[in-house]
Image 1 (cartoon, rainbow, N blue to C red):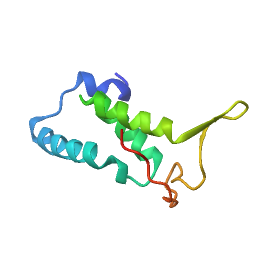
Image 2 (image 1 turned 135 degrees about the vertical axis):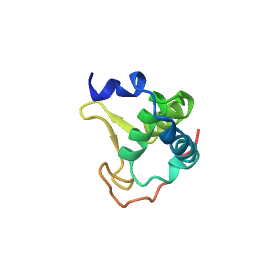
Image 3 (image 1 turned 120 degrees about the vertical axis):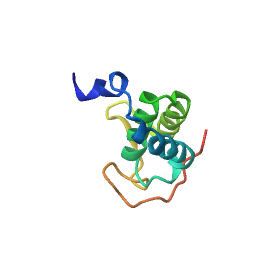
Image 4 (image 1 turned 180 degrees about the horizontal axis):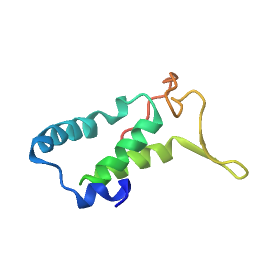
Length: 97
């Protein structure tokens, strides 16, 4: 069994379920305050996998909305926005869907 499939096939032990539920609800509420796109993308993956696909879709729609598409380069984001891996530029606030 690969790491990617463990979430669906191995349920949380009861001692871990309550903290996950609390932290996932907080993450779903405050995801715009995460300081980089990579963390937002990771959160969207986790929320989708563990039962909140609606919030995951909102996060991904927001990321797509904040991107630009170039015919040669493909999809990218402005340098002023937080970078993958932990940039510090937070000049433009993303819109919440």
